[in-house]
Length: 138
Image (cartoon, rainbow, N blue to C red):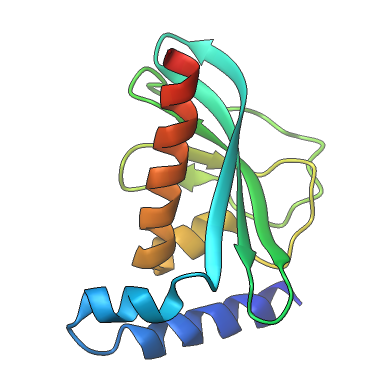
């Protein structure tokens, strides 16, 4: 089931990003996918554990991915170990250095895969985590 959701989402994004007019493509997808994030805890100076979720509103609102991320420049090589995690999702770094780690939830898609394969979702992710961590820093 996870692969089917990833295939559908990837196909939608591939179709939508086929031409060079990025702004127009983002407007087509606007409101169909979105991200939310919540602060879990501070790990160290400028390193935060944040829960990130991706939803689709194609039809009804549906949770697509839900994983935890180490966010911030102070994380260095910190990694969380969730040995009891039932997830089939892989751990890994995003282009900005944030570290995605599965949590205790099972979801149709993996956050790291979605964010690596879809620029639109990655931009939504960056905005969401920036807002979440800036609210904590205040």
